Image 1: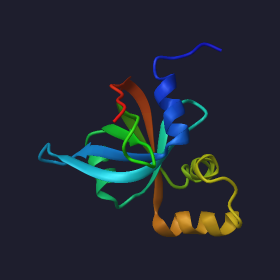
Image 2 (image 1 turned 60 degrees about the vertical axis):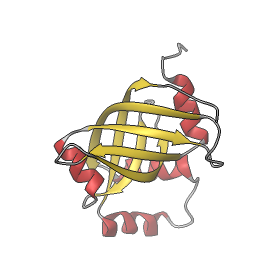
Image 3 (image 1 turned 120 degrees about the vertical axis):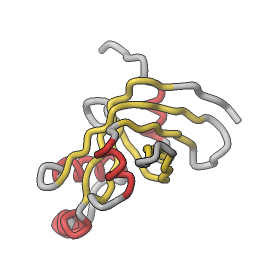
Image 4 (image 1 turned 60 degrees about the horizontal axis):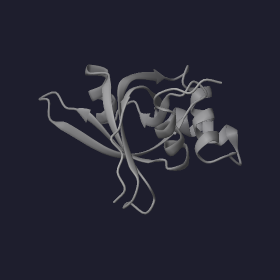
Length: 139
């Protein structure tokens, strides 16, 4: 298997899901959201959000974002990534949200309940293709 230019940061995100998502407001200023991220089978960074969230509205207007990825300790290694973001809405998002949960948390005790909650919350999957990563730092 060949390695890609962003393999290190994607591996970091797989083990450190705490990220700050930066999107752009209508006026061009940044809007920041602390979220949990993971990496899907196609090496895209995925995040669960709500259809009505400000970050989702910002991404519908400008489908590009930046992530600052940190460790649980906060101080230490960190990475940034930039890329185009696709928004996948329900019903197409359901299986992707299940995969997101499995990659993030593991098996759910009641998948029917999880699916109902995703419908009730109007969940979407934000899917970033990483175009640029770095720099990294040790704090």
